[in-house]
Image 1 (tube, rainbow, N blue to C red):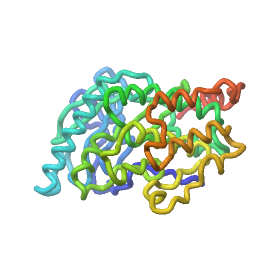
Image 2: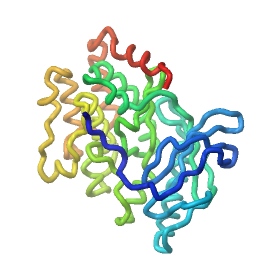
Image 3: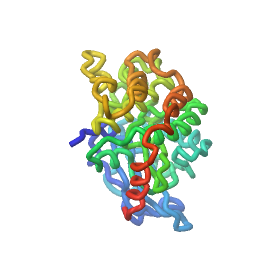
Amino acid sequence: MMKMYNSAKIEASHNHALPAGHQLQDYEIKKVLSAGGFSFVYVAHDKNSQTVAIKEYLPTALALRTEGAIVNINSPEAAASFKHGMKCFFEEGRALANINHHNIVRVLNFFRENETVYMVMQYERGKSLQEIILDRHTPISEHSARSIFSELLNGLREVHTHKLLHLDIKPSNIYIRLDGSPVLLDFGSARHTLSDNQTYLPPSYTPGFASPEQYTDRKLLGPWSDIYSVGASIYACMMRAAPMAADLRVKEDKHIPAKKIGKGIYSDKLLDIIDSCMALNHFDRPQSVFALQKALREDLASHDKRYGFFNKLKTYLNKPL
């Protein structure tokens, strides 16, 4: 069975989520969609009964909700960090609200309540790429991998144009809608800013998908950091497993290159693209999303001309969830 990492695994069981039926401004909470060390994500209905997703800033290392709705800071020392992270989370929502792109999760609203902040997003129906990978017994076809990621990069280009980095691209954060189009979820800029200056906070990277510079010198972060994660995600589509974590590779690189392990699965050209994206030295990677996108689109039409998997994927996604 494939081993896929979720976001930095931090125990969130001590934090209580808002209960179903709770009224949060114009939104009624229906259920918890996901829980992690930095946030809860809820499914909710707005005043027009439209389904939305609401992300609540709640870093377990800094604050707890044991009962009721109000968030309580763990200690006076944690207050400054919590406030700084809340400001960054709010700014993240504001920045994302300015991005209206088909391949980027749409932020509809953001507000402050319960001594924390909330980000309201368009609710997407479909399945994550990780779920799709795990449901299969064979690698995702080359045509499908090229199609999914070349389209996803349209959105990532827009993100980088706004001087933002995602820093947590991985199969579980790539959602495939019912029509087969990909959308990038869960931007981690608030968590990244937190861990920049507060070394006692848990790490916010995902082993196997985070670039080497996310572990060491964050001054080196750039578009090439997200590009490493894209390469690692395509590698996971091929191998149905997360690649070796970059911090371990830096110490002793036992990572098996795509060109070696993927022979007969993907073309040499795509395997070369994956390996170049996952270079430990960021100067050896494609330096822009545009350059990577151009490479992925080359020879796209010549692979898997029958589009068999892609059509099956759409059929699969349109089954009742």
